[in-house]
Image (cartoon, rainbow, N blue to C red; front, top):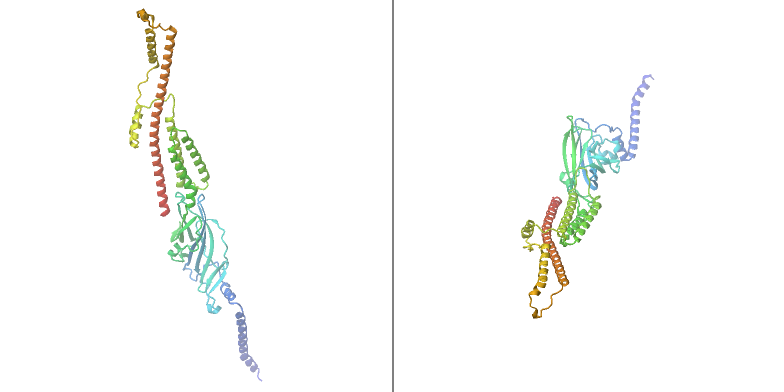
Amino acid sequence: MPLWVPQTLLALLLPMLLTQGEARCGGCLQAHNTSRPALQRLSDHLLTHYKKDVRPVRDWREPTTVSIDVIVYAILSVDEKNQVLTTYIWYRQYWTDEFLQWNPEDFDNITKLSIPTDSIWVPDILINEFVDVGKSPDIPYVYVRHQGEVQNYKPLQVVTACSLDIYNFPFDVQNCSLTFTSWLHTIQDINISLWRPPEKVQFDKSVFMNQGEWELLGVLPQFREFSMESSDCYAEMKFYVVIRRRPLFYAVSLLLPSIFLMVMDIVGFYLPPESGERVSFKITLLLGYSVFLIIVSDTLPATAIGTPLIGVYFVVCMALLVISLAETILIVRLVHRQDLQQPVPAWLRRLVLERVALLLCLGEQPTSHRCPATSPATKTDECSDVGNHCGHSGGPRDSDKTPKGRGSPPPPPREASLAVRGLLQELASIRHFLEKREESREVARDWLRVGSVLDRLLFRIYLLAVLAYSVTLVTLWSIWQYS
């Protein structure tokens, strides 16, 4: 047999043997792949050659659009002193990863897969107002759909800086923003959009815990582009969280006690001004209000840039109590009886007892018309004249002129005449004392009338000031409450 015949047969049979071997190996590999779970095969298919360090686009000119959504779950704290707001939100975002796509028919019709977050590319979207790291739970997985859509859901405890305006406390409304933006990538690389329509985001209170001090009014989303010193533009999405404080607790614990004390101060004007009890009552109220301010000082919010209106209200109430006490001291000093008290001047009598009384509809006040006081020397001289007249009528000269035969009584002795003169001087002194006492009483009554009219005038001015101040504050707080 020629030598070329076996070589020819080997050349013809070798391809057939190799083809059968490859078919057998392919069948074994396919059987092995079919025996593995579909989730493992899909995970290996997606992550074996995945590069998480590069933005997942095939054309680098195309930006990656990240859609975000925020749902406020709770308002944890509002620190007015440090201007910090702590909220708990549900944050959601999704984007399209062009390298995480598959055909569901090849993997047992799997359309959604959860994979570790550390294994894929994640956008660097942060909140600009972050001032502290909150205690947020770590969610290590994301959902990936077969079209390449990556869904990242996670709860966040957000501690952010916020410009808090406490002037309207406790009827204040705060507006704090949460700004989501890429810290590094420009809008040519990462663009940001809103997941849901703005109307649904604004009025979504489905999961909000509505039993705390703060009430959620709405979440207002706003998109804008901004640029730094360079020409690069960045995309950001702002969520304005609008909250309102519930004022019932503060109205009961702060406003009502102050109102009660002010009402008692007004009622204290009905105490008689000539009694000293009004001064003691006013001082007690002032001390009580001071203790009240010390107690509530820890409740009021404190900032270095302003004072709430309720703090101004407390200071003005304290000032009104001091003015009320000063007015009471003035009136008590006017009506206080003194032996050396000067009479009411004529101009003050006309001004207060005539014009002011007519203005206050008090009628014409009675005034005393006293005769000019007689000096003690004049009264002593009169009494001396009376004594001399008595002594002269009973003297020896008259007895000499009296006929002796008539039986007239004998003239009184000289000692009796001196006793009568002393008695008349004592009576004159008593009369002078009574007149001076009556004059002092009349002066005191005049000052009491003047003090009563001035007390009515100052009370009405004080009452008008308190009412005007109270109406102004109530109006402002009502406008802020229902605006």
